[in-house]
Image (cartoon, rainbow, N blue to C red; front, top):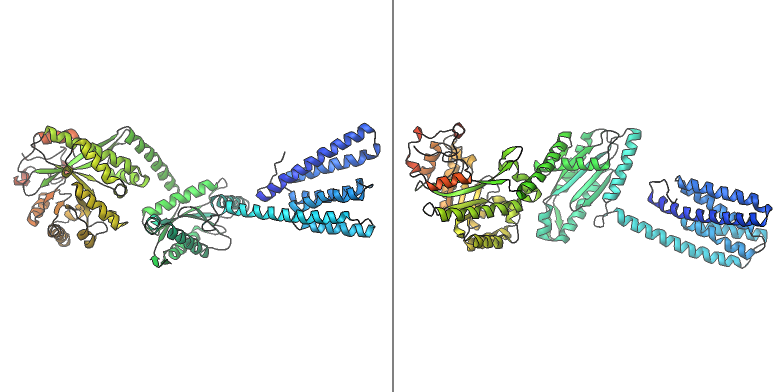
Length: 617
C-alpha cells in the first residue's frame, strides 16, 4: 500500500510518508462520514463524499510516482478544510493549520511552511480573524522548518555516504550500477552507445605493503583526481573497491573514441606521483565493454569489461583491451578449469614426474627435478604450463605447492631407504613467487623435513629472479634462513627474467640453472654460445655450480663439457619419469653416460624415440 512507482529514492521516501498521511486522512474521513450517517447529518454527506474521493485520488497520484503534485494538493486540501469545517473556534482552526505546515515543510521544501504560514496570517488579518493563535502557528512553523531541514540534511549526507566512496569521494558500485542502468534505458530509447571501462592498478599491492596504507590511500586519491580530469562532464568515474575503478562513457559514436580516452587515462596515471618525499610510478590496465543489444544488463557490461581488463593484464602493464565474445568463453573455461583444479588437488589427480640431472664430471645421476602433471579425467595428462599459471593467479599454487613438497619429501625418503647406493640425490622443487612470500615457509619446510626424517641437503628449491623484485630485504632474509636450515637453493631460468648481477652477488645461491633457450643456441649462434660460457664462468667465480637445462643433442653436451659446466638435464638423457620409472632407474642406474659414442644409440630428436628414458647400449 505504501509502494511508489519511482526510481528516485528521495521521492520514494517522501512518497511513503505521504501515503501514510493520506491513508490516515482517508480513514479519518470514513469514520467521520460513518458517524454523520448514523446521526443523520445529511448536510455533511456531499462534503464527506467529495473529500473521501479527493483523498483517494491524491493517494493514487502519489502511488503512480506523481509525489510532488500529490504533496501540493495535500497541502492545499489540509489548509482549506479547517476553514470549511471549523467555524466555531478560531483557535481550533489555527491549531488544525499546523498539519499543512508540517506536511509542506517535510514533503515539499523546508521553507515552504513559512510561505504557507505567511499566506494564512495575511488572510487572517484581511478577514479580521487574527488572534494570538497565530503566534502558536508561527512557533510551530519555525520548529517544523528546523526539524525538516535537519532531517533532510541528515538524509542527504547519509545518502551521499551510502552512494560514494569514503576515501576518494567517487561514486561507489551502487551508484555506478544505478547510473549504468539509467544509461542503458536511455540507450534503448534513443539509440545511444554507452560503454564501460574497468581499471585495475598494476602492482598497487606492492606500494601498499611496502610504503603503508596511508601512502596507498594518498595514491588512490591522486589516481581518482587524475581519472576525473581525463573525463567529460557527462561521464561517471567510480571506485568499486581496493584499486579497482570503473568509468561510464555516454554518447560516444565509436569504440575507438573509448580506446583513445583509455590511452589518455593510462598516460595520465603513469606520470610520477610525489607522496611524502617519495616519487611513485604506477600504471593501470583497462578493459572496455560496449553495450550491444537491448537486453544488456549492468552486471553483464561490468563482467565483460572486467574480463577484457584481465586480458590486458596478461599482455603486460599499462595496456587496454576491448571485450570480444571469445574472451567470455575463455573466462568461462578458466572458471571451469579453476574448479576442476581444486577438485584435482582434493582428489589426488596430480602426479609428480622426475627428470634426472647428470653430473658432467662423473657421468652419474646426482639429482632429480620434480615436475607436476595433472591427470585430467577428460583431457588426459596436462603439462604445467596448462594449469600452473591459473594456480598462481587464483592462489591455488599455495595448496598445490604444499602437496608437491610433501610428496617429494616422501618419495625421497622412500628411495633413500630402498636404494642407499644410488643416493644421495638432490631433489629439486620449483617454487612460485607466492609460495616464496608465505610468512611461515621456513617453519613449514623444517617441520616437513623433520617429519619425513630427510636430510635438508637432499632438498633443493628452485626460484626465479622475479622473487627478488617485490621486496629485496624480505628475499635476502628468507634465503639466509633457508641456507641456515641446510636447504639448497638454485636460481632457475637465469637470464630470462629480471637479471641483475648485484642481486646475484647479494644472494647466496648454490646453483645457477641456464635456461634452455640459451642452450639451444649452442653451435648455432656465436652470441648464444658466448652467453652460456659467460654464465658458467660467472657461476664458478661466485662459488656456485652451473646446470644446463634442455640438453637435447650430443653437440650440446660436448660444448657444455668443454666449457666446464657442472650438470646437465634434458631429453638427451631422459624425459620426465613417473615414480615407478624412477624406481626402476635407481634399481639399475646407468654408468659412464658421458663415455658413450653418441652417434650410435642416442636419437638427436627425442620425439622420435618412444622410450621413457634413453640409456647407452
